Image (cartoon, rainbow, N blue to C red):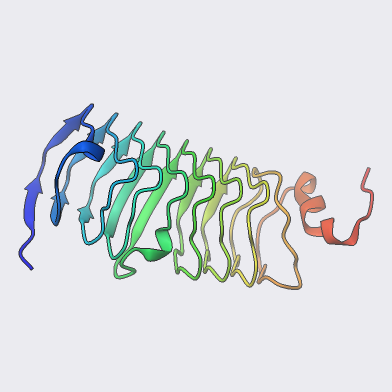
Length: 190
């Protein structure tokens, strides 16, 4: 399949959710204030792109490639990142809404999540080794058989992580976050 290649282009205020586009490779592009809600981005390639203040909620990402992609102040509700092409997958998230998004069974070592809302996100069976979750809301986020080795959770909050069902070797927690490790024991910490 021959993909249309779009390089070094800035898009501002474009509503892609209403455009008929398919099979595009975007290289070194910036999307600012664009809409991709419910858009089928299956098979699309995003290489060294930035999404700033965009809405990609409920977009389909089947076999989409995200290579060195930065999401900044984006609304990414319900995205199934686990359906992306895993080859060379790298991304970062800053001030994003990732509620109900899935990273199930992904290998996303070293990923940075900064000031994000990850309420009810799914990190089940995910390898997050050496990732940073800086000041993230992890309320009802799923951590089940998750590799959290050397992950920095010192400033994140509202998490519940069972140390018996996750790998937490050299994981960084603050003293205030310790209650999130003991939640299953129904104890009172003062």
